[in-house]
Length: 244
Image 1 (cartoon, rainbow, N blue to C red):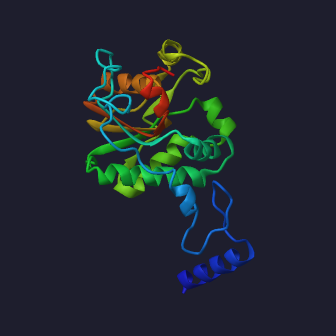
Image 2 (cartoon, rainbow, N blue to C red; image 1 turned 180 degrees about the horizontal axis):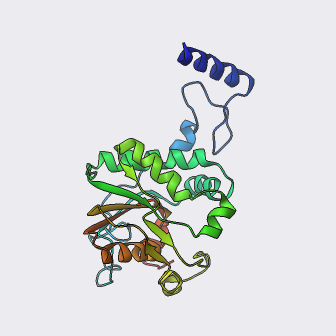
C-alpha cells in the first residue's frame, strides 16, 4: 500500500513538475529519470588500454608514469573530463546537487563491477575534505560518490579513517610539482586500518598528487593494497603527456 501511494505521488509530481535532464534541461519521459539519451552519448566509459597510474590511453604503466613513485597500486577511471562530465561534477561540488554525485557514483560502481575488480574484503574510503571546506560546502563530494558506489558493489564505506589535517589551497592553478608540495603532510590516518585492501574514491584526478598522499599514509599504517576510483581524468592532458 505504501509503495503504491509513493508511486501515485511521484506520478502526480511528474505531471505537475515534469522532470528535465540534469545536463541540457530537455523534458524527460517517464522511462528516463535524470539524463536524456542524447546527453548519455557523452557519458560513455573510456575504452582501450589505460595506464594503471594516470589513466592515460597508453601503456601499463605509460612512459609518462614509469619510474615515478606511486603509493597506490592501480587507478580505475570512468570518464574523460569532457564538458558533460564537468557539468555534473560542478553541479555536485559547487551547486549542491548531490543527485549528480549519486548518479556518477552509481556509474563508477557499475564500471568496477563489470570489470570484475571488486573484492568483498575491500574498504571504501572517500578522499577527505578539510573541516573548513566541508562546513562551507555542507558535505564531502567524494563521500557522496563513495556511498553510491558502495550500494552497487555492496561494500562498506568509512569516511572517518582518513583526515585532512591541513587546509590546502585549491590544486586547480598549480603545476604537478606544486600539487605534490601542496598536499604533502596534509593527511593522516585517525583510526586503525583493519582492512588490507582499500579503495580510495575521488571525483577528478589530474596528477594524482592527492590520492598518492592519501595512499602513502594508509600504507604507512599497514594497508597492503590501495586502489583508486575516480570519476574522470582530463584525457587531452594525458595524450599530450602533460602534468596538469
